[in-house]
Amino acid sequence: MSIPLLLPLPRELKLQDGQLDLSTLDASIALDHDPAAPLVFAAQRARDALNRALPKSWDIAGGGHSAALRLAVDASAAQPQGYRLSIRSEGIQIIGGDFAGVFYGVCTLVQLLQRYGQVPPLLDIADAPDFPARGVMLDISRDKVPTMATLYDLVDMLAGWKINQIQLYTEHTFAYRKHRIVWEKASPLTAEEILALDAYCRERFIELVPNQNSMGHMHRWFQHEQYLPLAETDEGLTAPWGTRHDYPFSLSPVVPETMPFLEELYDELLPNFTSRKFNIGGDETFDLGEGRSKALVATRGKGGLYLDFLLQIYERVKARGRTMMFWGDIINQYPDLVPEVPKDTIALEWGYEANHKFPKMTALFAASGIPFYVCPGTSSWTSIAGRTDNAVGNIRNAVENGLKNGAIGVLNTDWGDLGHWQPLPVSYLGFAYGAALSWGYARNVDIDLPAVLSAFAFYDAAGVMGRLAYDLGNAYQTPNALVQNGSVLFWLYRQPLADFGRQQHRDWIIGNSREVMSDRRQFAENLNRTVQYVDEVMSTLENAQMQRPDADLIEREFVTAAQMLKHGAKRGLLQLDGSVSKQALTAELDEILAAYRQNWLARNRPGGLDDSAARLRRTGALYAGE
Image (cartoon, rainbow, N blue to C red; front, side, top):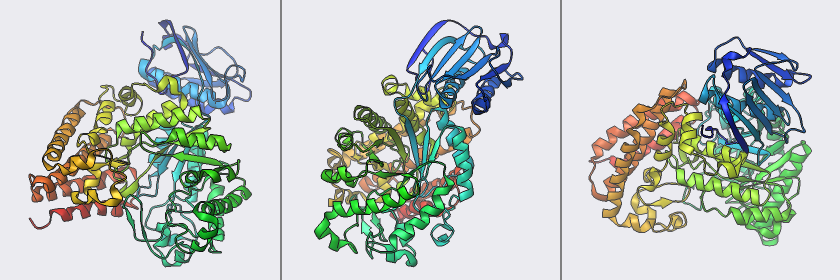
């Protein structure tokens, strides 16, 4: 028998001769720990899987009695979060180094039962993670705020892959009592919902970490007049990659009301979380030092100004009994200042291209003595259907260098820039690979990603959906025109082809892509080939056999994503050679919009939908005047 397919693959797995027939055993689960209560949830999860494999009346009881499944804790048997799982003809035993380890052993057993039913192979597994913290960050501010049902389902899936930290990236989508005007159209999460989600996560050994951007990315607040006095500038800005923001972006550190404002937010947000960590953001403060604090730049420099602002926030976070986490993209531009960051913080080194400078940046934080995470991404945003090869390379680069330079965690990010057009299942690929590598890099770096996606994300008995998601996620390469942090098939919605040569975009067009775009005949051939490629990939969808309650929805989401990819290619063809009809594109866009709205509301709250859909609707201006 070959090594079982698992996500993630364990550190050691030895197959023995033969199989266990569960039907020959008493239907009982023994919790060999006093008190037994901390093992009950793991036992219930195991019982659900056993019931699916062999419907019986499985009972759970404390004590070390003979049973089909025995769960126990022994710190000498495994390291923290580690476990030993043995399957013998007389039964199954899971011994965890702690309660989390027992839970993770059960997660592995659940996958084995899913694959083999009532006759799993005899084996021995000894397993433990490479990183103590293995996280996922989900953007809930641009523009999707998931329903509670969506969040609960996602937590269950990620917990089964041994993820143990989740962050919900927040700019304006928590329902602060005194700030209704900021969130009232955004369908925010409430305090009560956070409390419920926090409890749900804790039961599954996941730490729900509060996340509230506290420097930049405050433009949603500055849309409202009463918050403008807190802004660094009085005007909007253009980001380095060309995106225009009509409102100021960053809080000003020199406005006396800034810190009381943040303290008020923290005092309302933080008590809803049991985590003692807090991600204050602090990334992309493009306009800091350009307005009200400009005079300080002359004496302190931009780096010093940023550090001083960060330290002010640090003192507020520490006073509230939390460890401050912050994005490292600003401070790492000033290597001489990095050692001045307090050593009881956690820096978050992020970068989303496969060739990001993780070797250099992780070495910088390691040398400073500041604990840090590596933060790659799913590569789903501004792509429509993902960027598979980039996601794999980006996550591999981050985790490899995180291990080499002593990172204490991995935070795999999933953003929603410019409308959050990608459906959630597109991100499963990045979530799965990130979970696998953060648990065990060496044994999972070459994991069969399409196969594990089919098995443990899509539950597809035919093994179709994992390959489909993987291949559709590589459609971004077919035009042979690569851009940083996105797909040209997305950006063809955002701007005319003529604008791709503008100066502010030179840094994010990769290699010879500008030349490819300027060769109209060749680029048109590439775009036509892209349409054909997407059709070929999607031709297998009818063969999928997903055993999920949302199987029909997943099919619709991938169909819509495929339509959007092809529509992006056709937008390019319209501008290159006029080979597609404006009237046909208008009708096609209407169909896409209708499906897009339906799919959105199946997983997400209505807030943000109109803004996101409006971005799609505005692209129809290209088709006017046929």
